Image (cartoon, rainbow, N blue to C red):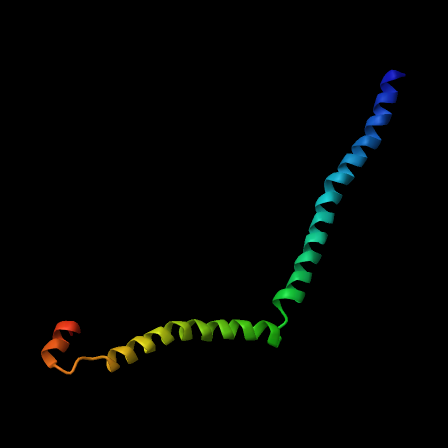
Length: 94
């Protein structure tokens, strides 16, 4: 009689564990799939001016920030160049 009660409890527990074994990965898969789709649709996919403008602005501002000091240096170099050619070669070698 004792053996029969143990087996009768083992069968439902085995069924519960087998269902959990297959259902938990499935639930995890569907929840992650929905989260990834939501992220793609809301953050990555929309090509609006809010997304495009900062990227383009960053691509244009970076070279401008580099070019402005170079232009300033070249203008100063051109403006304050010495009149004497020998002095010019001494201060600004080629």
